[in-house]
Image 1 (cartoon, rainbow, N blue to C red):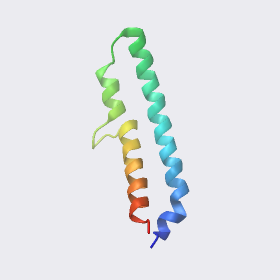
Image 2: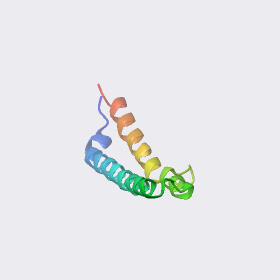
Image 3: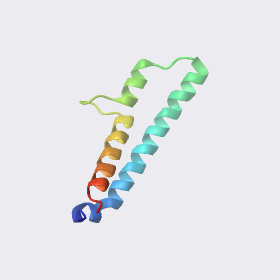
Length: 78
């Protein structure tokens, strides 16, 4: 049995997943450039990138998108 609601919207979920990935990647690239130049990573920037339960960062949003997409897909498989 498939989840019709999910099937109708799966393209949107994939788009959101790709967006979250690209946002996390761009932010990581900025952190890495800073590290290469200064040999340090500012804790505040790393904390923002990862996030918390109350203030989600780009990496946290990527994790949430993956969980939403792949958990629904596995539970809707025959």
